[in-house]
Length: 433
Image (tube, rainbow, N blue to C red):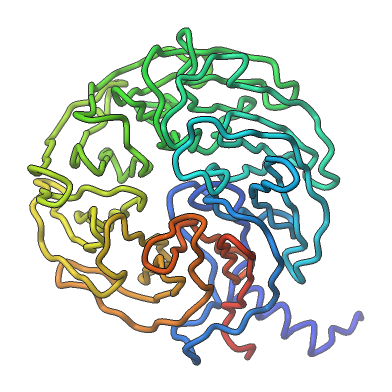
């Protein structure tokens, strides 16, 4: 009879009790919904500074890391000796540099030009990167070799948003979709994810910064795209529009936050144009607008008027960060404000807080580079623990001593975060039994 060692049983017990470590292969996590399901992680911090497992130098950029198959991917911008964008790949365990792909990229009419915005998407051994000027690359995830590429600005005459291309690529089955604001009728374009051949291009809308999301509605896959003029439900196979809700901006397209889906509800929020709640119909591929609330200005706001932070929905309440860093709770059904809190991130114009749900905890990463473990309820914010992770830097924003605006990745019981100078990894695993 085969003997099983005690050490093997201990490892098996740990895997069984903690669950299998998961990756973070795209914007907002495994399912692109801000949910982190790993177990065996800390419930409070032991020190005011999180111990750093590894750190590596990188250049400036707004996009957050993504993690898959033991590798971490991120993009940055270099300006010496020429303007370039880079896709970088690191060993997730020790930070070793594995490869980088660099290409010339001169920024033209891009405000806040620290670097790329869109997260690298990893899928079936390939990476998909989208730069601020519209350079789309499919690279081999292991070696970094170019499999196919498009200069979308040249090919589709992009009506460039003032902050450049920001929406992350979305993969649905065998296509990769990009929200770019191209013309004619190329606000959203889909390519074969293996060959790079165009499958379809649709919509004459202006582009903006919000990443599309995939939902299932009445047995049909639907991609929700919030453009600079409307919210659309598209057929990912053909680009056909199932439904459209106009949402024209009063100043300029400025929607950055991703549409948040909870059950049949879709919540959207914009800095100038307020909050809107849609309801997906259950028995047909259609939609209805429930409410739209907007204040007199970005200072005198109603409901929630976010700029960078994507809210979360827990039960029947919305939690998000308003235009000056006010963490708010809204009643989902009406948009009425339940409470406001000013302790999670300092109050300032565009003050940012990224939120991730893990079981009954909400992990927050604020623009001062602090990581918070919290609970959110209609009764208020309960802060359990807070620790510093990474320093703010000034390329992303030169005000208030710099910021950390990039969404971190939570994978392999670690957190991966970047600023304009480095990318760091901190271990979040609970003590080994």
